[in-house]
Image 1 (cartoon, helix red, strand yellow):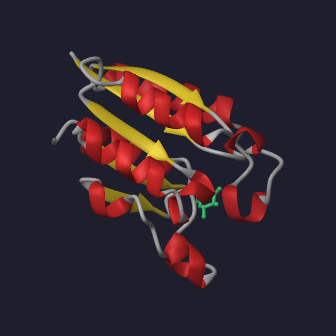
Image 2: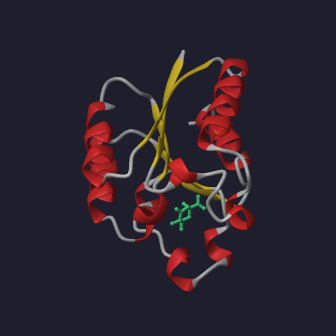
Length: 142
Ligand code: DQA
């Protein structure tokens, strides 16, 4: 069975109350349930986590070596400037999919730049919580 680590970066714990017009009204807990149900249908084993701390995200990427086949990551604002997370993804050589709830290319200019996407298999952006579901399907293809 494929094992997938689903990672969420800073401020995603506030989903459901944070900028609902952009991110929707589902909480991260709602999204976790949705992802778990989809994973069961796809016969994928998942672990779901969130952290507001760059170092903790990096430690979890390191720990994923030998344990997970694919990483799905919504790095939040770290997307746009964390070379350290980029280097961690590159270092562990686990196929990684970057995801975003919002379409980062349709917002402020600084959001259209991802320093992490170039070391990922690809980026899924703009489908709300559906981005997580699409990413799970993509994980079955890699
Ligand atoms: C986000 C987009 C980022 O630009 C932002 O900083 C977030 C959420 C998204 O899922 O749309 O925190 O990653």
